[in-house]
Length: 279
Image (cartoon, rainbow, N blue to C red; front, top):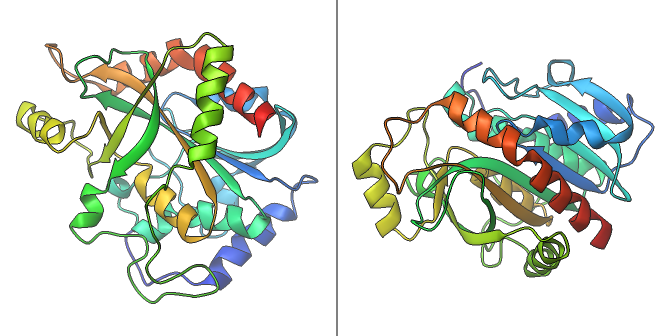
């Protein structure tokens, strides 16, 4: 499905109502699980599972490692709604389409969003399998005009010019740090940059990203965070460093990304569970 007209609140409400009709739960926390991170959803108890394809307007991912399913239930003492995978801008969807799930979560009453991704490490001290707390982002694609907020603004959803200062909630970041210490997990911190993809970065791209002040780079997350903040949601962002772009290697592959995710899942699960218990 290629880009079409701007979406309206009625479409977000329709998606939310479809979800609410198929679950007994009322989630307060949303989870977006990136490449290879779907197993976290297996930890959700008393789960109701809804395929993306069965929800009006939901974009369906075509990427391996993104299961395309909404899982709603209990996790870490919270009622959560988790996306097993996500759709990406490079798949041909518009920015509004790929962020419709976040809008639907907000309509369901979700107030806190935990967003995860697999990212290439640009910081020379990062290695594959590390976890990084996102403290800020560089919206490189948005700087070129591709924003999920482009078009008419509905004031009932959020302000015309939302502030992105502190987009990654400082209190939630502190919870993540405390949780990492509790679990003896080394938690890196840094700035995430979104590029459009789907090709992986060239060596010159990597040098540019590093000089721009980014510690990790990926192809998602930023539009979701912008829409969440537009809607008044609190956001916590975590990157799984799937490969090091700062060190010599033959090539980068999607299989490498998924393998790193599989190996680091226990750490990520432990960290997110600890955060949920502290919220």
